[in-house]
Length: 385
Image (cartoon, rainbow, N blue to C red; front, side):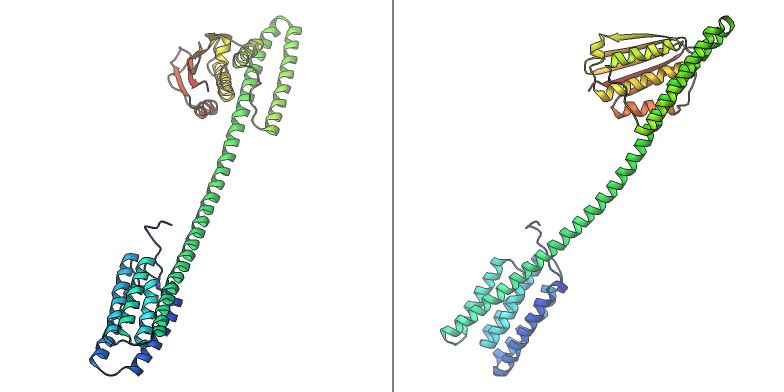
């Protein structure tokens, strides 16, 4: 807790101390009334004590710490004036009660100064032996110590309560954050699963479609070759089902641990083996530079190229595709261009949305370009690491 902003105890928190203090005050006032002679000093002292009691509302009823300390000094000053007007042991007892209350709202140094002033007034004005003076001064010291220790205990208790409250609030926020993070993790996992299934099925079904088109051509020329092609299609479909089962059992899987250039070459070869369009792969300045990327970036680029090639066959009915990957300084650029039918406008489906999401996860940029009869172009730019 900052020493520049001390904790100010409320009336409820200081009430136990005030109860003891008022008992001491009542005893001192009773003794004062019994021993005092009805003189001008008695009347003046009574008035000063009455005003000091009224100031309790200001000292302990509210306000900031400095204000309370000021009122406490004024209260102690009135009590000192009352003691000076009608000195005696009874006045000293009443004065000690005010010192106790003042010490609870003032710093140690100021409380000690008030106690020293009270001791000086008592020693100078009260006609008593040295032992009595020592006893009265000791009473003042005990009164100040009691007020200071009670206030310190109250401040520590308040600090403890505030600390516990802050911890409880932080725990509640942490629980809320944990719940939100759990929901986000579930949503992210679902999105990854949807993207994985889309990529697996989309790529496999496009390959199956290409093989069926080839089989249809062979049916007119060579029934045996067509039958062989159909068996290949059957095997391909079974393999696709196995991939879907693995995706459902294991969750999203990354591409194989091949370097990026080798994975892109294998992807282009898959399309050629399925009877698809010609894929012309260009790697600049060399395959090793293209593959010099982090695993996350390589996976994103591979999936992006896979989706772009699938869309070129499925939607664009392309017969030629150019796949370029170029490393330039700290960035890698990927460009997929086909000669498909193109479009004047397009509606992003799950595939393009997944493509955008993947590129965003690695802080990259993505651009699409198309026109009727002009094919479709996908351009990607990412940091290599």
